[in-house]
Amino acid sequence: MAAAVSSEVEIKEVEEQLVTPWEVEAKDGGKIDYNKLIKDFGCQKVEPEMVARVEKLTGKPAHPFLRRGVFFAHREFDKILDAFEKGDKFYLYTGRGPSSESLHLGHLVPFMFTKYLQDAFKVPLVIQLTDDEKFLWKNIKLEETRRLARENAKDIIACGFDINRTFIFSDFDYVGGEFYRNMVRIGKCVTLNQVKSIFGFVNEDHIGKVMFPPVQAAPSFPTSFPQIFGDEKKSKKIRCLIPCAIDQDPYFRMTRDVAPRIGFQKPALIEALFFPALQGESGKMSASNPNSAIYVTDTPKQIKLKVNKYAFSGGRDTAEEQRQFGANIEVDVSIKYLSFFENDDEELERIKQEYKTGKLLTGEVKKLLIDVLTKMVEGHRQARAAVTEEMVDAFMAVRPLPGMFD
Picture 1 (cartoon, rainbow, N blue to C red):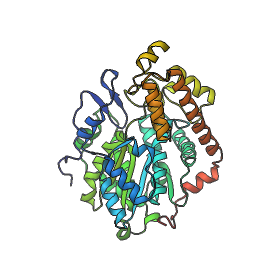
Picture 2: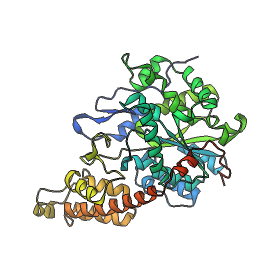
Picture 3: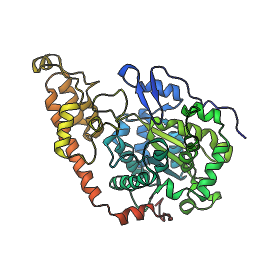
């Protein structure tokens, strides 16, 4: 049943950087080379023309993450736009691996962008909580991963998703029926050699890891959700778009290779660069180092302390040198964070230019960032506090989504 590895599935060994669903590391603490990732992974760059087309089709301004190149790469996003223009349907799929009590800002990025896509295109969304994955990869007890899944669901709901268009599910609770049948179909098409090549598994890995990729692949196919999309004949016409960070690409290269062999359309992807750690951008934030990240539970005092103490600066050693030579904004973490979360394009450009030319000092830029992050985190905290256990149950209830395309 399994064919040779296709060009979409093949992973090339990259000496300069390591990017997998579980590890992101640049050589010698350097920067991730995203152009090289595009080339090595075989995806395409999101060009300005595509951003303009999104605005034209939706009648809404592009999200800052899109127009600033945070979501910088894609696989057949153009075909999703073609389908939407013709009146065809698509749905969104994204997810979260619950390994910590609360989310950090890097975790929020795909959900903030997915909410924009849901609102702009008025489409349904499925959100997978991979509590099984975290049990298999982390030293976390099974019941604890289930608890963390519900806690993370509260943070996700607080992003403002439309309950009439959104289904959140835990793998431990939902996998079965047609979802499991799709998992088995996928698994039969991928050899052990292929899964080792795609994910870097070794003989010493337990077989639980080998069985997991079909679990993450299955939501790409609409028949995994018969309660939402109806019978197989109707649902197979609906395409899937997956917003995610680019480290998740290996899962969906495998999925795209398998899809036509089991009678499905290939899922499309739109992929983000990594949200850098406070200490710099050689990789991504780590939940194992709380000082590398700003969490949605951090107090204003904690945010101020973390930014002032840990945010890597591109400014000069002294105020006099900064006034004379200006900052290197290409490596400055405060500027990078503002590029994510300062919504006003003109204000962002002003800050960049004044910092670059020495008019602004590092402390002044950090203060601007602290103000932006404090307001954002406080807004999220209030929204999360309003999420009840009953609301979580409602979002996670297995149910139809009437009017999901209205």
